[in-house]
Length: 275
Image (cartoon, rainbow, N blue to C red; front, side):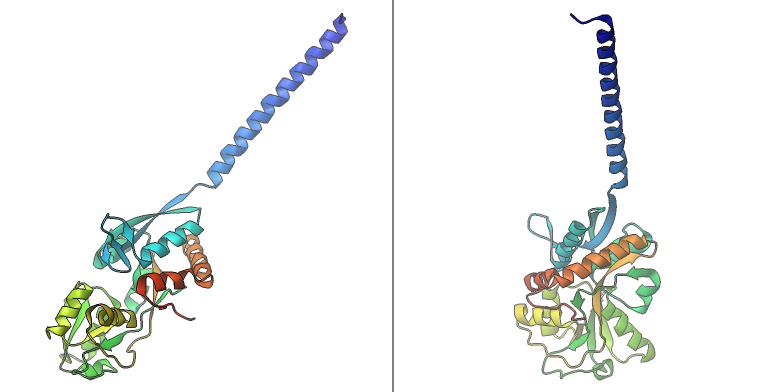
């Protein structure tokens, strides 16, 4: 049978054990809370297309698909500190949304030009070659410059770099050629060329290859009138940490061959810049 001193000693040991256990629970709770707050995920609204095959569009079930959509998802996967939320629209609205701050980042084969550099930030890693070529039917002849297009009719998609280039030449050379403007699908562009609605289509090699492959247009082209690549584009006020993180993710995806795989899958060829 324990004496009074032994019982008292045991009681104190029990109290000490309970206190230590309580302190441990409190510390674990606080550490967990601190960890959760430091790893808070930031939602980033990313603009892309809803009807721009094969770059960014909705499939038959309404699911966003395409090369740019897949690349956005690949970047998002590499950046656990961010959660990308898609905002899909036509191209002119994509530009407007980014400029107004409704979105923070945009990807839909966007090229750099002087005007855009004034209004937006660009990523540093290009992912699709967009050198502009002047596509024509063989009967029209091969064009190597906008000067060669004198007296002809060009088609350009609204708000694209090709529209900017076409208008820049016209500004210095009024009435050099006429221009049809719109947001035509590739099928409509093929129809427009075949029906002589217009006879020159300023476009990258990919688009010309697509028209020739899918619609048998047999277009030809000469030298590039402008050298360019597609880049991620950001709102002017975008956090530099976000831009830096996206650049790093893009570098890794280019180095490990992911972007090339996406190009081959969606564009049916390797259109990734070599630099």
